[in-house]
Length: 345
Ligand code: CP
Ligand code: NVA
Image (cartoon, rainbow, N blue to C red; front, side, top):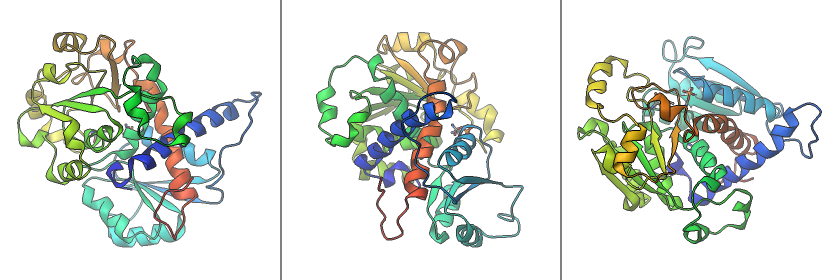
């Protein structure tokens, strides 16, 4: 699973329903003395998931390690200083060897081609923990957070959403179609938003500087068009225009991991793109707008008033990395069926 573009909308929703369910049953289970009705799935019993991370991580790594424990298995962290990959060994050989001993690979890489190569040669499923192009597990957590906070958004237009019919989805609070604004760089987090939100009826309004380097690369835009998501995407350069009517405002760092040398230039190009109360007021966002950020956060892209204020859902969003990754580990690695490319519950 390289990007959420690889899954159908019902598959994505199934993962979210399962995340919500795992969270509901696991939280009481984790508190001594609390009554719990169900033990979480133990589908990783005797299994090991390799965490092949060539970049830093707090949320994704901790989510993966704690989720694997809850599912009865083990996560094996393999940082770039620990193994032969990239120095003495190719991704092809590494994928085959790790895949011969572990039951899944959760990989965080630099260039997206690196994870494509791992997936090509791995005998076990490979899940993208972030690459230059995509960050699928982040958008699952963002969607779960929005569903859980659906009561904060006025309940108009629920009918359109209900038309994406699947009775098993009902456990998750319903969410009306939202207007989601993204102000910032066209990077991995935004790219998975582009191929996902429109398929659930949400409109995207994006502002990034005119320069091509801050716009979606062809490999991403091709997937957007293939999924007909472009019909619900507005993209301009003016942050105020982007937040117009926004129910949710999202941003990400202007300097992604690996772009540190471009810091000065990027900070210059992104002047005026900081998410603030004033920006959203001037742009005419929904007065009840809420804020999301994948973290780690720097003040360049959002000020403290918004980030730590009552609109901010960033910490529930960070918590939800665990439950969505647990859901994926359970479905992809725990219940993986060699003879099927379908996700089964
Ligand atoms: N949001 C996210 O992926 O955080 P980490 O880099 O800390 O894993
Ligand atoms: N776009 C950021 C996301 C971090 C979770 C990066 O790639 O560094």
